[in-house]
Length: 598
Image (cartoon, rainbow, N blue to C red; front, side, top):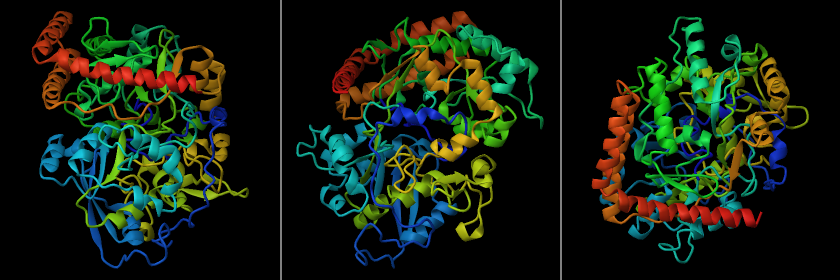
């Protein structure tokens, strides 16, 4: 469901830096309807702030600070750096971000109990379904009609999404604007690599003979070989085959690092569920089932740790530490497609250096289509805010050509430039600004480029929306100039080895992937009883899962598993499983309908 980008883009500027294998994958979305909206104002912080409203309609003379409750954020505090300066200069707004991923899930409970979540809120669908009847979010239906850019997405995107909340929103009013919406089609998959698949450094993999990988045991063996041959980076930093982190487990109900690797074998965990996995056939499997993919991947990590392949920092490190290691090429196995962007660049690609997809023969991936209707979260305006009009103006700008270019690609003239044919290409600085945290000119706010990026860490319309000026995606990987530049030693060697244009092409040709319609809708809210049981079970499963990965031997692993199966039953497992099964059945039904109407 939220396959495309719910967690990702934990650093969205990866689209600047993930310059690998961008190729003819654009043909996959040629049937998508391009956004023919009129072009926005030219890039630059000097553009008029009130572009989305009638001239002079909003007074920007008073500086304001808006509190942003943001489930997507990995950062808490005031937005600083170049993006902070940009928003301040254009709107006289300072963003103060509250992040449950930093402060903990209790933050949501505390603030909703107090009756004020924030001025601008970015929440999960299940939370939005609670906030609407509680009167904690504003009806945006009338306000959005007067916007320049958001209004263009009402009929095809916002209305269908809000209609899914019919139990709490029978009139279909617009309370939420879903995140990461693509402007392609509901069944298109545009990306050149699946969201989750095995990814490794190409030069290291070739350095140990590039053996064919038939299964996970083969993967562990090749990781061991690479670890022995490449124990440290050129500057002496230790290289780890697998690195894990806890701080994304959050409200997912299980170990997030297990969740996404399960996708390699065709099972996903639908958003707002915690007890099940679902495959493309619509089969629902409890995660505590002895034959579940959840257990299989736990066993994989356990065996990896027994072989000395798991980063010893894993139990204590957070995502930021992992990102640092990815930037330094200290990790041998990646699984999120966007993780490549922390290291890959065109210049490195010219030397055959970069992280690439390395398929495993017995895998059969499950992949959601483009997030045409969004991906599991939504922007909303807090009901008690005093700044509704200014927040609406800000959100309208976020989906404008200018707003999207800044968010996705940075500054024209610094990160990218126009070509003779009116399209865009990355500058030399722009190719590595994210990885190198390149200093930003003082005129733009100074500081490091990565440090100063938007800490919202999410967007309404995604980078798989067409720029009306260039007729290309905002995602720089899919610019024609990037595609040409990416014809490097790395790319061509990979293509020759696998006889495919890119990873998606390979998996499709070899019938190793199921692409399922992306479903983004209300799946209902838990009763207070189920909610309490879910919370207890989730904490238990997450804690036990980590213990299993680091168990001293197979006997302890098995003992922990058996004990977990028994203990969660006593915590109300059957009730939570029943609720999740109903949610999954709705997804299965809607996928069947989407496929039938394709």
